[in-house]
Length: 365
Picture (tube, rainbow, N blue to C red):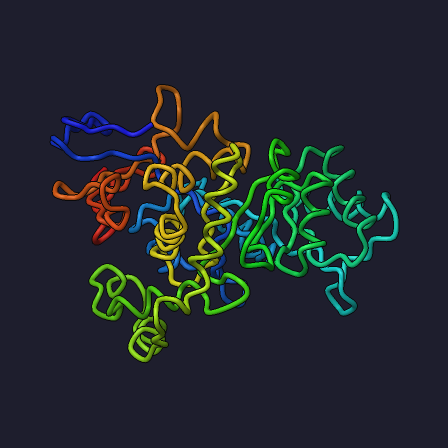
């Protein structure tokens, strides 16, 4: 799964990584963030560089402008910009009345919307608040015909979540709308193959998880965040933050559901929701440990489970011969299996075979 290295050879150069932990690149399956402005894709996007600096080498964005995210995806693959490998649903299939509504009255409507999305680069679609269960089922039926993933917008009501599981969505995005789940929920979920991306940074039912990490850390002083995130974005939220007693932080209780699902053999993956670029993916893993996961289980959720969720586990998610070279090399004096917060202590990032000094994103190969 992971390994402790001695030497790492990248494009005929050998690097001494004696005693250092090497992990697969992190995968964020619910990663929002701007990819263009007024139709212009920047040559350097701080959102993408910030993610890579924290070891996030693959992202899936379940809601973005189609013209922006798919252009960035193509430019990344062509080597024109430096970014994580990028996948997305593109524009959501929105169910509420309005100018962006995706009208779905029957299976043929669903086929129409999924075909048009697949034609512009989507391998997944976001079934967003389609009000009736039969509409959601029609999207699923069309997706099975077209070999596409379907992620719904979760967190509305528990009844919605449970029918999404029963109907076989790819996964539930966002936390369940309850603080605690019991055996009846786990019995339904177990063996379904339906994943769970809880986005604990924005967990429902109480203070969002991100507020805890803003509370306990002086993030405006974090050197890597300060290198990549503009001060107009980083400083206001981090300098003047909410403080609360530990028992008021709801995300810790919500995270216990992820441990319960893991214990039943379920699939739980990280999704930072783009709350604070790069580090939010780590917040997800750290929060999972607060909910009872071991550091190993949380790291697996941040790597292999994300790859499995996206159907890419034959290429990504573990360190194996024949897989794509997406790697994270942890600092010499850090061990995330002992302290999960060491997951952000990254010296090198290897993205698709290219080696970068993580602190500055300087390309070494």
